[in-house]
Image (cartoon, rainbow, N blue to C red; front, side):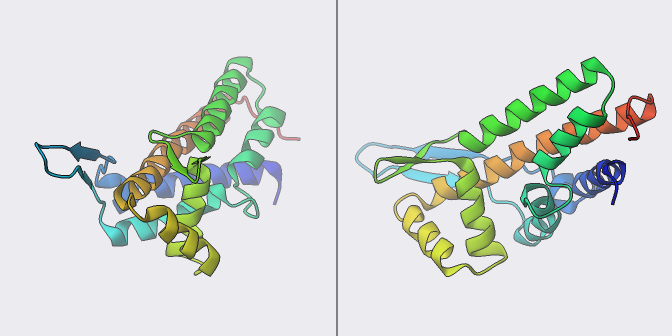
Length: 187
């Protein structure tokens, strides 16, 4: 597969995400914490349709798995090599910075045994310990992390996937535009 084929595949798979039932449902992660009088704090989150999420993740994980041709960091590198428009390259460089920030942080910071857990790691625990690979060590780590903060760990995962998807779709839109205006160097 050529570099140009990879960029086109990225656009195609991002299109699959965009038209998925999960995205079309307009799900937005939401966390609500309540404290009333002497009652304990209660936390609730908005949950997506589980079947739609699982189906969505089948395509989504191609963007986050370093063994896949459309792994986001490989695509960012190809963009730097093949996008000829300086403004387009700058916009894609900003998207890469945003991606890195998403992986490191998150909308909610979970701390276990004094260590902040990056969003990327929480995503990995859910995808490989719950959804797809039955990795027992990751499942155990997810269960340990979730004790006492199940809703918060779930919210962090959903929020990360939501924000990462926003970046993926933005990159696909930038690539589509670059192809349209002839700003993609073939070799």
